[in-house]
Length: 161
Ligand SMILES: O=c1ccn([C@H]2C[C@H](O)[C@@H](COP(=O)(O)OP(=O)(O)OP(=O)(O)O)O2)c(=O)[nH]1
Ligand SMILES: [Mg+2]
Image 1 (cartoon, protein in one colour):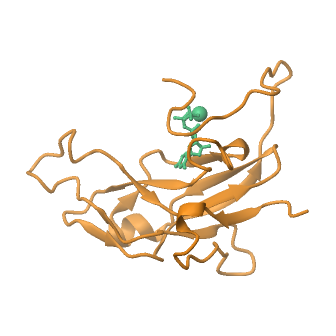
Image 2 (cartoon, rainbow, N blue to C red):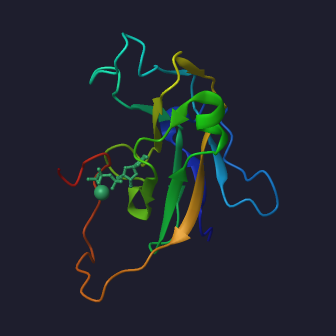
């Protein structure tokens, strides 16, 4: 049985997406690409001050889901070139993709990348552009951990505020 990996979600099955790959022999991160063309608006684009309207992060679709053992997590982190060359950051700093997000009943476990653009121009992501990298790691639990059997039903606040 395969231990960990990426799959294409149903709604992108016919879109010719590629599965993430590492670029070099000892690269930690699997580069993750956008599933569609996507505009990340500049935070400055409707005036001199960022407002609550244009400061809202966007969710860039990847068309991917990731499976892994229960004691692992996939971390989405920025590429170091993204802020330097494109003005793009992950406003949640690190995206946490839980093992039980995979195939959840709400959205099949589709991974989205939160992004904010601090350059003065809108940024046009093209389908297939590498927008972040995913790193699989183990996590630890506490002695009095109580979550055996509790089920994840979605993401982005599904467990409440
Ligand atoms: O950048 C991200 C971060 C999270 N997720 C998905 C996978 C993750 O398993 C789920 C929940 O993420 P997290 O626990 O960080 O967010 P939350 O606000 O606590 O949501 P929830 O209440 O659903 O746990 O959302 C993404 O697709 N991209
Ligand atoms: Mg959570």
